[in-house]
Length: 339
Ligand code: UDP
Ligand code: MG
Image (tube, rainbow, N blue to C red; front, side, top):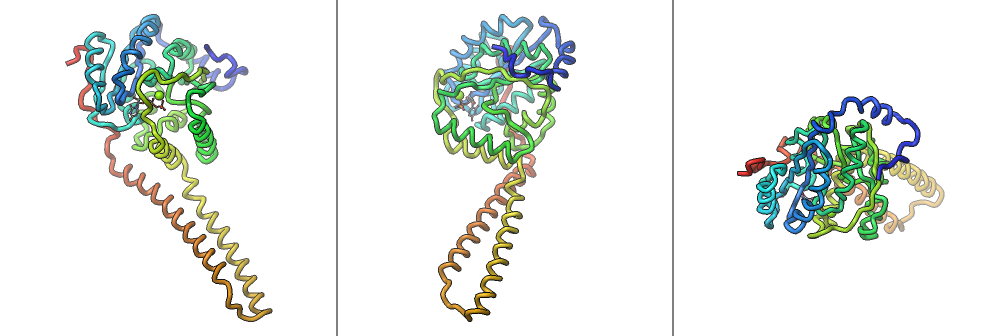
């Protein structure tokens, strides 16, 4: 399962990892937290627990499974609290409403005090069996171990295609690079958790933030299976907003690009003016030209509207950031004695 091909030569990451290895806690004293955001997942929780218990039990050390209930409207909270009564290793952070997966993850990261944190979905699309190679690589000194999807046969063609194009575009215009085919499923070391906590922005595009903090990372390849129960919470509209958050949160190029576009248009206008000037000198004043004029006006005004829209996107985000609202509100953190 471990990807030995990911770093065939001793790169910078491997060198740092080799140094960090000695600093890892012993197996018996290690505490690992598994963070699981859940939104309307009543059907999936018990399937998830049944698969993950034996794996965590065989890991050595202690563990907590922290579910973040992201304002579920079904019986998710009831099922979680019941599970936490049966198993003291389960804790439940109950948010006051649905804040979205990114905010739910932020809440979980802010609350946990483990040596290493594993972030995963509840629907078993992130196979719990990967926890073993994740922890192994972490013990070998890597601070981030992420799952890399080798096949996404379970996703529709359209979703795969748009995802591929989006990340290609994102990487070309932003100054942090998101690895290909990588989701939130990963293990992160305590110091990465702390670094994430220091990023106070409200726009929580997690994949971008994970990439921004850096640290030695390694990939573990896996095949992404079908969702075990329930259905996806990310429809087209949500994915669209997700993509916009990523782009406007991590790149200012869309804002700057208009300057260059404006220069191009201005150059075109000067050339055209010169042509008209020469034409007028040679052939006198020409009345026709309404059609081309109308096309110019339409073209330029649509360009202006688009650029205004892009400024609006940044302005909207600035407005939200300046309000300094918290990313989430916790109703209660149900732990151990599950009250
Ligand atoms: N999720 C969440 N809040 C939301 C939407 C989703 O906590 O507003 C959780 C969801 O319960 C699941 C994970 O995020 O554990 C991934 O969601 P999903 O499986 O629907 O995404 P997909 O795999 O289709 O991209
Ligand atoms: Mg899923």
